[in-house]
Amino acid sequence: MTDIPNTFNLDGEPIRFEPGETILQAALKAGHFIPHLCFSPEFKPHGSCKLCIVVVNNRTGSSCAMKALPGLEVQSDTPDLNHRRRTLLQMLFVEGNHFCPGCEKSGNCKLQALAYDLEMFNDHFTHFFQPREVDASHPDFFLDRNRCINCELCVRASRDVDGKDVFGLAGRGRNSHLVVNSPSGKLGDSTFAKGDKAAEVCPVGALLPKGQGFKKPIGARLYDNAPISQSFGVKEEV
Ligand code: SF4
Ligand code: FES
Image 1 (tube, helix red, strand yellow):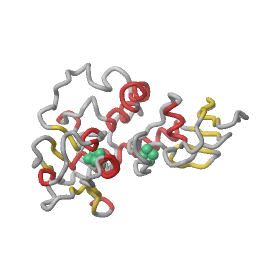
Image 2: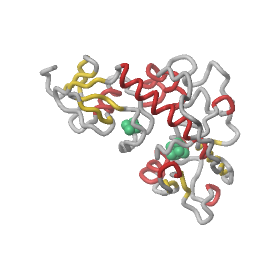
Image 3: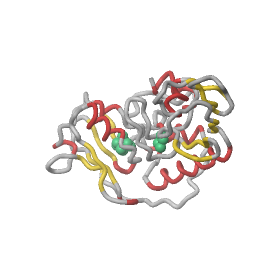
């Protein structure tokens, strides 16, 4: 327990925060990694992936959605929470078709990097193997829904930054999927452009530029040399 105003404890370390910040925002700014997938400091929290779960004063919640308050006792890096995170990752891997050896995002993928960092050694659950549409209609980008984790970062970027509202989620439960706002439902018929903010936010290999795959040699990719928990501040989050 700390008595310094606007400070909470994260795994025993004091973390300063600005009023209004969430626990995850304050932790990342202070250089303390809490795993997350659907959060980006540039957008409003979404709260869908649940990777950012922490225990706060003995209650479990999403750190991207919980406001930092003075004196909170927050636990994040515990065997139990990391086990739950591994389970969430395994569920994402079997729900989609994430075959990393054939994916050009490999080495630069947040889902894969978190799975490595949290020592996810197998998928554990039965694969759904759902056939999902790949949309290659756009001249510069393709959309592979087999790899989409429904994080809605592209939805928020297109709506809140680009002012275009190109993307949205449709369907329910295991059938929820990314849709494109265009007369045909195809990316090529939408107003999406390669300079859009939405073009740079996908944390996985779902919304990717054409003609760029496998350009970075193995060894030079984003997460080749340092795990995501150590490289997040430098390379990605800021
Ligand atoms: S395409 Fe990428 S950014 Fe958009 S919802 Fe799917 S995983 Fe998230
Ligand atoms: S980062 Fe908090 S729920 Fe996804």
